[in-house]
Length: 248
Image (cartoon, rainbow, N blue to C red; front, side, top):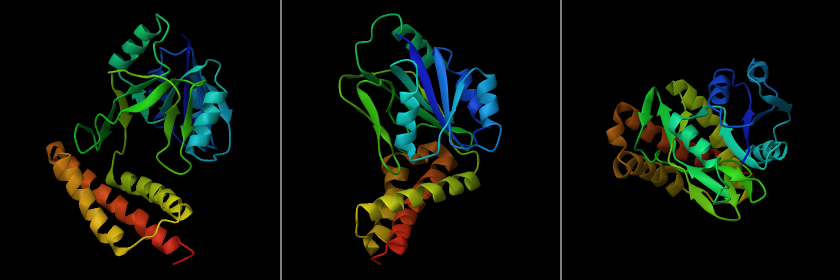
């Protein structure tokens, strides 16, 4: 079982070295870059990755392309701000010793937010398919929240995939602005009607669900920030869709 790692990037010089250095269990590392103007490509190449340039055509499309140019059929897909934990790396090394029993594997994702590891707030274990046989799996999702669709058996790995999210609230707000625009475009594409319930009740429900039902209060001040930002995200995506819609 030989594995190719696939990472898509755009101006990720802050993160890319950490991601690549965690991939010792992979025979190959492919970085598909969509026009970085910083040192992302040079750092990746110096660390032994094969860098391929491609214009960005959506997250799922970019990740499917990255998988397609890999040398091996088994692909480990990471975002640039992610890295394998030592326990997950050891688990993958063990998996490689014998023929795999499944066509894909999910991993739990543990996020660091404002310097704190988040264990509640609906953020953990946040299982995702990240290791898969590309002959039986494909990324889907035209706008946001892309995911791997698998035709076959899906197993579970228990080691954490580490996700290094925002270091500051300002960074979170910048990221949110980009993603809520994509989410709004998706709502418009699907012709989703937007009413006052979406603008008022849904953000409030999102805050209560995140902070109370999903025990965000146990994550301290960072949990409160996550709940507020989740509510703000909900409001923004609906507000943008309402004001961007040509049928408004």
